[in-house]
Length: 226
Image (cartoon, rainbow, N blue to C red; front, side, top):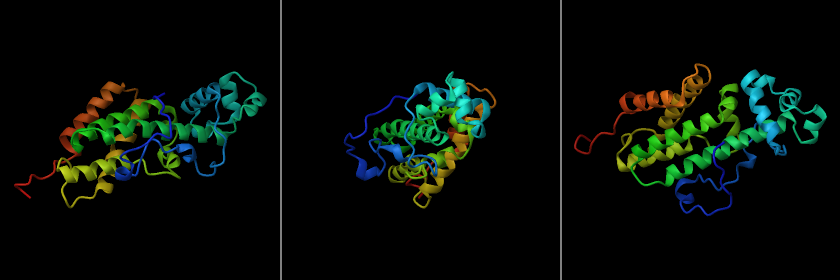
């Protein structure tokens, strides 16, 4: 699991980015589970991840999770393990870890192109930490962001910065479209290669960074050619 952060800290650049790791993502849950109480028992959460890895989204039942955790169904229920609560907790963890990983990238020094490489690494770190959940459905990020800012937002901010510092895109390009394309062109193929084809993280990351460097992104035009 990625390192956690304490919510409630000041975000000096919050007005600039409108996206801050100090925002409590407790409400970032699947549709219909906004009132679910988070599951705190780590045995149940680890079991839920195993069930997702073995049986997918439809196989995530309280019975299956209790059995995987070595608990009775009654005990699981007493510990708050409804399917709704398990899903809400896993999605909240995904949202929290994504924000924690991306915030340092957004406030780091350097041009947008260099920070984009760091953002891609942060994205891959989050994917690896939540791989069973992401393998279960390609709608997971949509579920997790159903009541929060888009998961594309950090990439949108980087592409907007890249227009300003001329390290990414040209003045007439669309940061939102570019962010949507880059996020989805990298996230889901990485999930598939890691989870379905058994690629190592090092192998997959190397190939994706090669793709970024040599074809996925075109350099912004120089001032002399503008």
